[in-house]
Amino acid sequence: MAIIKQYRIIEILLFSTTALFFLKYGAPVQQFLLFLSAIVLYNYFMFSFNDFMDKDKDSHDAEKKTRNPFLNSQSRQIATLLMALSGALLILLGLFKIHKIYVNVLLFLIAFSYSAGIRAKNKPFLDVIVHGAWVAGTLVLGFLFFDVPVTIREATLVFQYLIVSTLIELSQGIRDYEVDKNTDENTTVVYIGLSKTKTVYALFIFLFALATPLLVDTVYLKYLSLLFLPIYYFSRQDTYDQRANVINLMIGLSVFTFIL
Image 1: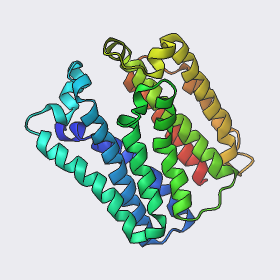
Image 2 (image 1 turned 90 degrees about the vertical axis):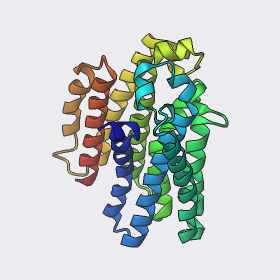
Image 3 (image 1 turned 180 degrees about the vertical axis):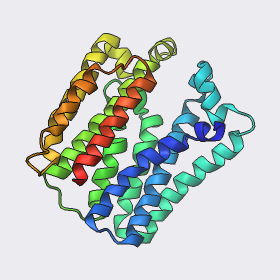
Image 4 (image 1 turned 45 degrees about the horizontal axis):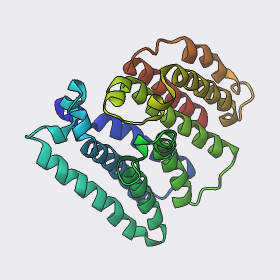
């Protein structure tokens, strides 16, 4: 369990499920496996590179210190090797479909710019924008990779995943508010404060629910998703884990309604 937590295996697999949407479009098996491999490597690189860049900050947080492999003498070397390998393989996979290599390059740049370079995660508003591109971007790039025509349903799915990814970033910011403030991390949550962040958070949940009917073609099921609105709003979201449960419910609803 410690290895699963340290190397964020569950999160990597969860975020990589965005590739599964493209089975709906009859993507060739070989191309689908190529894209899925790129998405898994991308998410691993995103998480591990972020942990690497945050190791000094995480050393001040007892909980984060236990799950950051770069702060553990026994796992530091293997974590560094896997991080470098995942980034290199992400780019190299693009050589198998050279005219679509820009997909792999863009994924790499999103992962890099979030934690380093412009370090988007430490810039108000830019942190939620780039984090939003982390998840929603995999769908957009998947549409480009498989030449999928984008209708209102595809656009709505991207919009919802953009909201979900933004909520994850805001939720993390709420959880880390005190540590971020004390270590001069200038996140959106620190910049606008907890109260306004929670208002924005609730607004995004409403926008997600209101957009869901656009995913459904069946008239009898079209507005069924709105029944979840009270659940989203009134469920306890005091802790990060409670908010994660709601966000996972939102993802499940989005997937379910899209494949109907």
